[in-house]
Image (cartoon, rainbow, N blue to C red):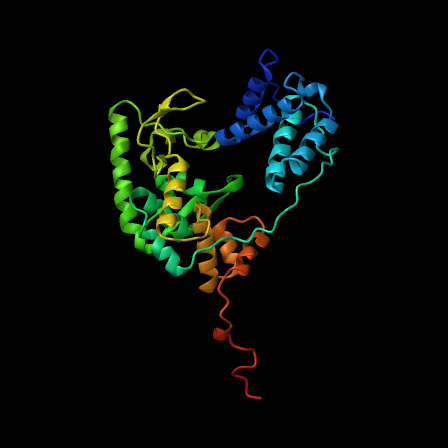
Length: 331
């Protein structure tokens, strides 16, 4: 059966250049482009590096994915990521869809109980982190954002009046979450500095920022507007790998990741603390404060409520504070 994709890559290009051409035609994120290319190259090298994927069958794909599970012991999500990359290669680049046929040995899904920090640990943690990294960490903990959602925040995503943050999350789905009152003044001051930086870029003949293709079509001048600038921009302008233009991108996520780990170590917290730990801690604390599972699901941007329900396993369940349905009845 032929693929539904109407776009065909330039046959004169090398395979990996064809892959990038099709990924960009379909407006995949640059991070996804890098990940898919890495998996496709790993698949090719698995068979010696000289065999074109067109000469391999769905059984060869099955064998590669099974090896990831059995020998490499990758997680179920990692194996699925590799599968998605190869499905894209065969369906959209080689026009040889096969995904319904393969049945590799599946990686076992391990129970994922979130690591969370208590109130005392959070207090100790924030005493050991400072500057912009502290502000970003407060957003993760105070609003429940994922790491990259925080890094990619735009100025117009923040509604100071209504105390809301608008987020473009997984699957390009929008949601809103709360903006914590204690950081509003600090965040306002930070945004003013970002606006001044953007004005300086404009004066120097720059000031353009990356805009996803769909938004760029809808908002023609968005790339130069202040509202679309990143809340946490890089210190220096850089060359966009796709357009070749000099722009100011957002900060690298690695800086915040290192700062969070360092702060946790200095605070004497023995748990494995990552940026996602702050998001987990937000969710657990919100449940302990009485929010419903469904409302928390909306704030967190979970597609499946079962993901949200994981936090019920680590929340503080003080039974002494509960009342029985019989309490208060005149029997």
